[in-house]
Length: 274
Ligand SMILES: C[S@@+](CC[C@H](N)C(=O)[O-])C[C@H]1O[C@@H](n2cnc3c(N)ncnc32)[C@H](O)[C@@H]1O
Image (cartoon, rainbow, N blue to C red; front, side, top):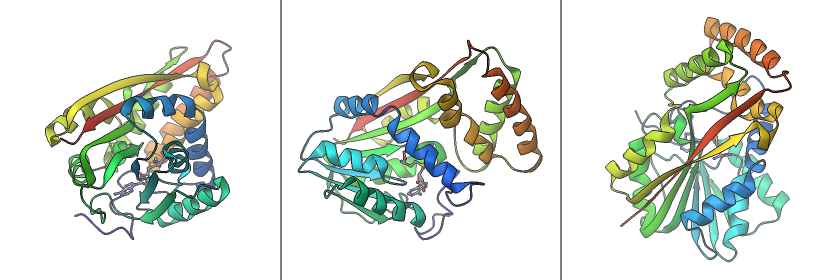
């Protein structure tokens, strides 16, 4: 059942506040928002982001990226919406810290958007679709709030594009287990390549998906593991978690090899409202 924004029932497989170490998760989100920002800005430009636009950062989390979008749109405006009250509070702090005036934040559920129809030039949804139980419903709601000609841009992930060397059974097992755990919580770690068809089915025009590799050469092997792998143990409970922790120990050891290398594919899907 679709619920209201003041509980986390509709947050799918991402419930900030229920991590073992929430501060550490916030640090990971911050790192993930800064480490490849130049590449991300290029993707926004390619998708059609321009100064003056009215932008919705949907499932904005702690608002780091909403503030960056606000800097890009100049005299435009960014609205950040998220279901998690604690993250919206963090987003307000980010706005103060960054000194950006043209961004505002509010609590909201993407399944029940309380926003005017036909009002946004650009909707950005970053690393949320992999957590959603009802992605098509979210796509329909976004279509309503986009103005005709407006652009939806989604950044997400697909485990079929996650790799690590030296060859490691533990890595393969871990990725499989974490993906299955996320699936049990309502998420989908293979969403990246599926979004193309989903946007087409929902009625978006000029749909396009591009994959941008992000490797340990860009991030360093430690940060690669930190933002792309280690935190995913949180998707598991009980015995599965114990097994996954054992895999993680082996992965960390394998990562000490001076030739260790890893990469994830970041999927950017865009579509236009006709
Ligand atoms: C992995 S975080 C990404 C946050 C942010 N977009 C970023 O890239 O830093 C996923 C976000 O989706 C939010 N979320 C999950 N389900 C949601 C829903 N139904 N409505 C609004 N936000 C939701 C979570 O609260 C969380 O902030």
